[in-house]
Length: 353
Image 1: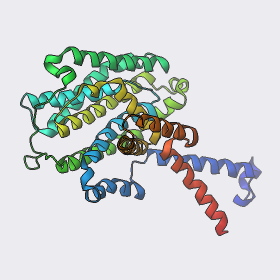
Image 2: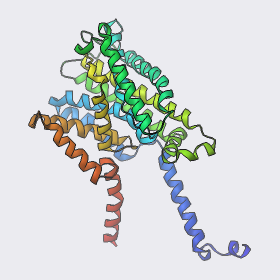
Image 3: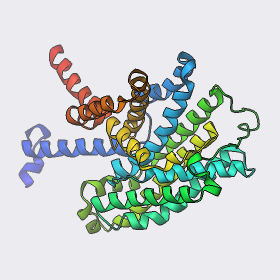
Image 4: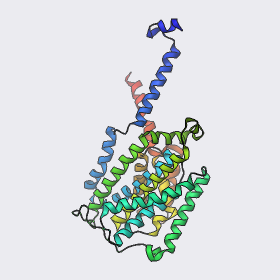
């Protein structure tokens, strides 16, 4: 041992140097996971909606819908992509937020920002109590519990038609101008910048969450839940916190829908809506946040395009797209792109040599 430590660095055993190299690579990987600082390509990504506002002025309504649903899919990514909880009940929290914002406006609370926060708070409360049911089970049990929560909330909204409007939906309410200046218009100009700003704030918040020690612990739970108790970490408490945060973010997305459309349909609570959220996330890729954004945009744009071509059988083509992504694009579209970049760098690096 004394002889080895006295050798010059270049003469030390290869195993020692390769071990330290692996440790350095792991340290760099952990630093990247734990860093919420934006990279240059992320700045470009978040400038795209601002550019699209001027390039596609006739498609503002579609853009507002994409950004609204992207917030809901981000919420789902937190519990599925990071915590490993498959949920078919997130439409329930989305709808709770939508109805909360709509009912507040219908009863005189028309200020949009506080109304949006209260909509998220309502979903946080329901999500907190629901989390105790969800984390009790495993995998399929959790899926069935979230599905049951969605069905219960949907039927409650349907039965309470005197409050929610039932199958006819909630309408006839108005939202005050943002900061008392920027009124919502029929063309969706104000709604675009409003939803854009909220979605950016939500993304930054979730970026800090998943980059924090709490977020790293969620990844550890997803990868090896049986090892966490040995480290002194409470698995269920972390999963409950993640589920509650996710429910609140989904509620904010629902509040955005209600405020920008000034209508809340009961389909916002439906299981098909929850399944759409799941499809959007799978298309883009789970556990990356940007996968939620990309998947939502691809799904919504493809839906709009295919429905114009074939209004009846557009789901057939969407199904083909989903199968192609799952079979040939590992980790979704964003995951495939992230896996493609290192291989391209290596190929061009060899060609340069």
